[in-house]
Structures are given as C-alpha cells and as structure tokens.
Length: 423
Image (cartoon, rainbow, N blue to C red):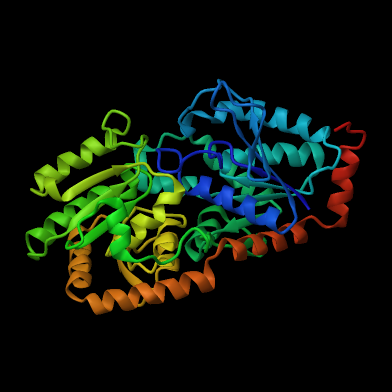
C-alpha cells in the first residue's frame, strides 16, 4: 500500500521533549519506519515550521513533506487551526499529481483529521484517524487553560462519524469515544502505542549511571517527558518532599525534558515553577533537571533509575512507561487512560491517583524499602512490554486496518479521482 500519514504539528524530524514535541512525534516516526520495513510506501505530511526546510526531507527511507501552511516558524499547536485550509489545499494538489496514488490517509490529531476529511471528499481516499488526545477530555481536565477553540469539538464529532476507522489507543480511549462522542463501536479499532526493542532494552545499571555521571549509592527516581503542567511533574516533586519528610526515605529526582539541551528556565518556564516547588518542599538539592536529550540517550536514563514515575492528570496512552518497562525498570504511574492499560498494578509497577503526592510518596517509599519487589516488577514489566507493546505489532495491526477499509471500491474511486496525474 501507499500510505499518507498526516501529523500537522508533530514531525518525525523533531526532537521529543518540548512543549509540543512528544508522544505523537514518536508514534508517527516509529509507525512510518515499521510500515516501510513491511514494504509499504509511506509519506509523512507535516507543517513546515522553519524557513530553511526543503519541501521534501528524508527520515530514514521515508519522505517527509514539509507542507507550506501558515508562516514557516514554530507556532503553538493551539494556533494552527486557521492554517489547516491551506494545508488541505496543498495536500490535495500534491496527491493529485502523484504517479502512484495513495491508498489510505492516516490522520494524527484532530487538525490532521480535518485535512483528512477534505482529502476524503476531494479524492475519495479512505481515512483512518488517531486522535492522540480528545478535546472533551482535555477540556474536562484543563478547563479555562485549554487554549483550543470550541470548534475542535465539532471537528472531532465529524471525524468520529465519517472516518473509516477511528484508532483507540487503550480501553479508556475507546470508552471516551463511545460515551463522549457517540462513536459506533464497530468502527473503532484498538491499537496501542509501542516501543522499539533495538532502542530500549536492559543495560547494566552501574554502567548507565557512570555514563550519566549519576551517584551509584542513591535511590533515583526518573521523570521523563514533555514539560507541561498537565504531566503532573509538580506532583512528583511534592511526593519526593514527603519521602524525605514523612517517610524518612532519601531519594534523588532527575527530570529529563524541556525545550533546550541544557536545563533553562527561559526556554522552559515550567522548570522555574518546579524549582520553586522544590524549594518550598526543602528538597531543592535533591531535584535535578537534565534538559532535553536525543532518543539515543534515553535508554541510559531509564536503565540508570531505580523507578520511573509519571503521574499526568490524564493520558490518552503514554509511551514513556513502555520505554521504562522495556528497560526492566518498575513504573509508578497515574491510574488514568493508557497508563492504566500498560502498567499492571502490583505486577509490573504501581498505580496511584493523579494529583495525590501522598499516595505517590508511599509508592516510592515502598519500592525503595523492598528492592526485591522492585526487581520483580521490573522483570515482569519487561515481559509485558515485549509481549504486548512493540512498534512492530502496532504497525502490523494498523496495516490490517488499512487493508480492511481500503477495499476495492474505495481504491477504484481514489484512482479515478486522481487519474491523469503527472508525478
């Protein structure tokens, strides 16, 4: 098949860890890479956000088309909706002139889905949509701080009704689609996120700490991901304070992520807020900000930690717990969304309520005091990740969805719509 992946704000070329660069970037990059490995032809369409980017870049053997839509500068994703008309017009013309037509469009996020609907109407190409986050769920948790317009809800409603398949990333995502969007269960396909076995695997902890310059004799908690309030990093800082105070258990917290390679409060204001909380809790010297790191470095951080912690307010899926599990590190996660699905409570890690530092502190102290339990959970997490959550199995499941929805009649309609193309 020839597959068009749309990811308007999350390019596979971007470095993960910034405000708008995280799980979706990783998802698109790995799905594209795996599909190409299965001998499919994949194009990724993303918005051009730098003036010197060529129209077509290369990511491994994948074409990345940097779509001219709006000014060629980085913009918050909340400001991109007005530029989706231009994005759709470009894609339709581009696809019309392809010598070999695309068999399927897979839209990632609701704005990409809006573009996908325009393509479906103009060219008849079947549409698969992965939301990655649902607007009504986001509004429920973020309230007035949600910067997306209400128009998002109508767009998502239309996508749920008109997409040939909607991909739910976990059971909670499926339930939200049915209960909040009246989705037809028969047109929802459950396909999780994954990890790459070659990228994430167990390493010697002492060696990993040596390479990072971390102390060998301390209990280390790792938080890794996007530096935004809804990820609940402040909850982790407060929990560490309770570990030192109420539980009399000393621990170090390393926070990886941000908008710059070096931890910088100007580039990443959230770091300043978190440092302030650490000072209030009396643990500033125990909270370390490591900045943004490339994908090749992340396995060192996961392997060097005694426990990986992530307690977002809500989480459509959450790729970082899988990566930690793939390195044999136990996970303490918020009992929400995809984390509830990937982490088996009491077996591969522990689940705690979000925004509950006391519960998190108790979980951290439990694993520090019982190192044998922590090792068993790490080993069980590794087995669960390898059995259920590899990018290879994700891509195979998606390919089956693509094949099902792009039946002969739809393919004939697509080819008729773009016949006469010159590329």
